[in-house]
Image (cartoon, rainbow, N blue to C red; front, top):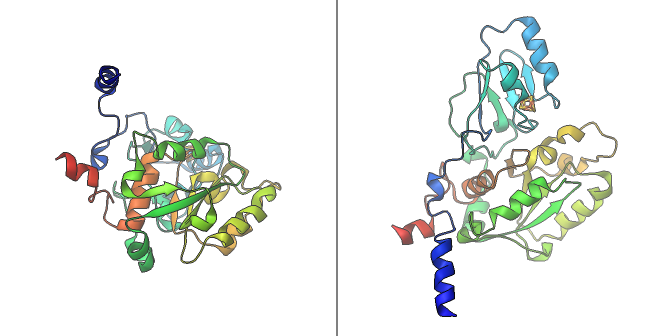
Length: 268
Ligand code: SF4
C-alpha cells in the first residue's frame, strides 16, 4: 500500500505550479492586445470595426480595443496582423472598467489601478477571501475556468481564496454570464445575502459587458447599473491565471500580486 502510494507520487511529481509569478502561457494564448493604427485607411477602419462581433474595436482619436467586450476570437489580428496583435500576457484584470480599454501604442504592461481599490478590501480580505459564484446565464466556460483556478495545478487556495456554497459565508460574489432576465432577481438576492463589507467581481466578457448577448431582450443587466464591480476579469472565457493574478492584485496589491506566495517561500 505504502509502496503503491510512493510510486503514484513519483509518477505524478509536483502537480501544483510552484512559482505563480513566473508562469508563462503558450504563444497561442490570446492575452493583452497591442494596437497600431498607423497606415489604416478609412475603409480599413470601417472594416475592422464591422468585423468585430461585439463592437470591441473603435476609432476615436486613436484605435482602441475594449477587453471587456472582446471575445478574443482573434479575427481582427488575422485580418489586420500589422495593426492588432495578441500577446500571451494573461495579466489583464482591472479595478476599473476604463482600465480594460487598450489604446493604440499603449505600453505592453499591466496597468492595474491600485488607487481605485477600497482600503478595507486589503485590510479585511488580504489573507482570506471566500467567494460565492453566480452563473447568471453563463455558458459554463468561465465557470469551468474558475473551477480550474482551485484545482491542484493553480491551487488558489494557497492564498486563502476559495469558493463557498452559501452567500452567508461569503466575502463577495463572482458573476459569470450576461445576466439573463431569469437570473436577475436571483443574482440580486444572492448579493443582498452576503454580509457587508463585500466585494463584487465580474468574470468574462459576458458578465462585464453582456458580450454577444448585450442587445438580447433575454438579458437584464440592471444589477450592474446598481452595483459597480471591484474587479473586472476579461476573457472569453477568462484564464485561471487572469483570475488569480487579478484577485491577488485586488486583495494584496503589487503589480503581480504574487510576491507573497507562501508556497514559493517554502520551496526556495
Ligand atoms: S478578437 Fe476581440 S476585438 Fe478582435 S474581432 Fe474578436 S472580439 Fe473583436
